[in-house]
Image (cartoon, rainbow, N blue to C red; front, side):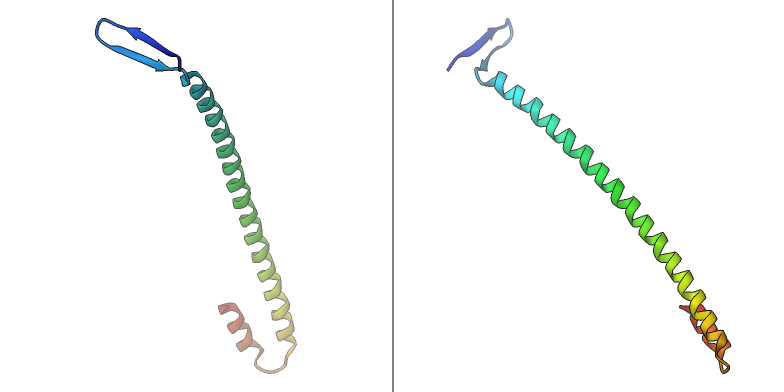
Length: 90
């Protein structure tokens, strides 16, 4: 194993031979992690948009269902006002 040693007036330290390869792999790992985080944030953002759209669609469906049920119950001759009040509470 080759070791680069540096002698300073205050300290003496050695750099292992594998340190260059380690630093290169560390940079590659940082790039892979950055790519992962970008994709993770994009996925979270897109899932949030999808949830909002699904919630809005559900709200629209509830409103249209209420309108249909209200019109059907208005056609009933008996106790239609009580049924509408019950539907509004839902």
